[in-house]
Image (cartoon, rainbow, N blue to C red; front, top):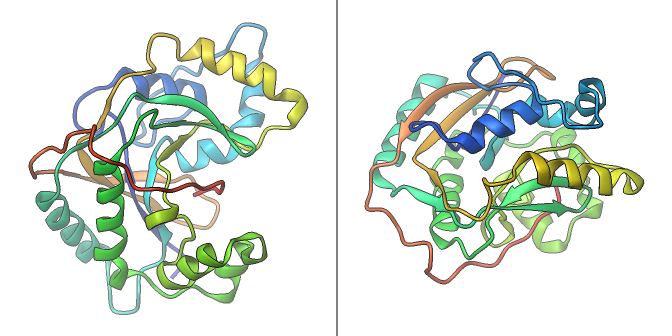
Length: 249
């Protein structure tokens, strides 16, 4: 089976959020098929911006909770939806606290600007609880993650959970660009800061678990289903779990 699924966090999945609209205008696509008026920053052409957001646009605006995977033999997407809905009902809504614009390695993303223990706990629950639905990595899958560039801990996570940036290596981020050449970073950074002016340094809610689908290799990811989180909300000031990453979804 070539179809892949993922479980993502998406601001504005249930309640409209201006940050999502701004991000989708920057990327140039909405994951649910809504028309988007693509942004054209001052001094830029849209073609220039499109060239910097090829992968970001294909994956869509999101935060990875469970990275893209194929379903295990004997499992189907109806079961995936049921399992995600059941899990979501037991988990509390969370926030990305004091959201901030940062460069992570070579690409730009929105990340938590303060400790986010609730978000870490949510991501860990999604990774662990749904993993029996995931088909094992193929040799090609594993090679695509460049295990030679990973730390021993990241390689162990890759082999156990199918993705190296989970649990203690998790860092919630909402990707806005592909990897940017060093010489272009000042211009891109300035354009992003201007584009998101007035919409940073606030708590951004994650109210649902969202199932995304990649119907064929290389196809754009789209939003398949949305499952509201239903537990007691967590407080963003609790101690944070450690984590970092520099990879792509």
